[in-house]
Length: 349
Image (cartoon, rainbow, N blue to C red; front, top):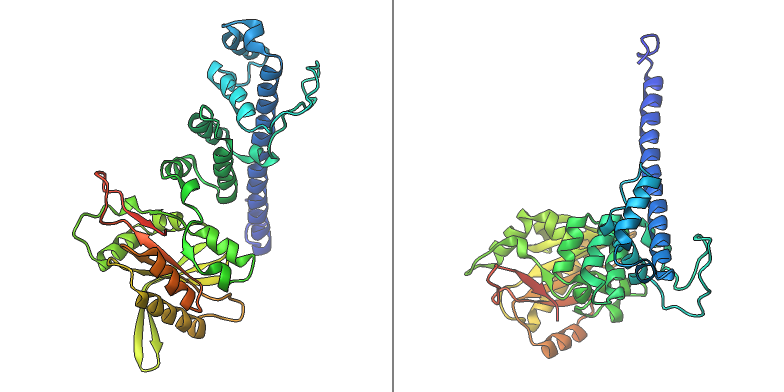
């Protein structure tokens, strides 16, 4: 910094602000470049399909196209044979069904059916697309690929996180809990709360072995809080374990207390390693009422609760939920049915 003005505090703050603004601009520029490159990949995949290029130009088509594009655009690193094949698959995987498509024209920028399902796809990094293509293209599971593509954009997942959720079939688990949310929470909060549940929750990171107790399970979850929060879903912030509340003349201790910034509400989680009992709902409801009276502010929405137990009768659980005036999800855990790899599952049925 200039010696003449390096002691000027306002000038120093301005320099720091300019530095931060420049870095934000760099990030935005990089994201825009990625978006435009994916649009080009999409259009190239479209051209390959529309021109029936593999049949027209023979078995060496991708090798020749790769070589010719590298010679024509030497500064690019994205024209390997494999990448070109991914571009075609990207186009086919994410396309809406074709209707009344026009004939191929020379202008490759002219849009032709089928159309891309949504521009959000251009915000998904190319490496993530390749992961989704590898998993779902051959099966023709476009909707499943789109589910995860949406999640990547919404949650900002890395590729490793994406692979982890694919491996645990998040698309089959999300929003499946047995709850009273639709009855006791207003829309759209009830829909959002339901969407935050999973069936099952996968907690393979705990690496627990039998026998184990509730306290051990909670400790395992807390020692892996980052993974725990990731599996819980977006918007959860950790408040405390064995959270103390003074209720009347007694002390009550909540197993796990979180706050969800999307719902603007506290979330009380009780973990039971035994079989579900109707009284568990009453206990959880008491804790939730205490949170509403003691912690909840006028800006917060009503507290929600999640009860996780080792086993439950779904009919009994449904009756217990219907008898409660609190928005609760009753969830099952298959901790005693662990896999050979010590996979730990907490699942609402």
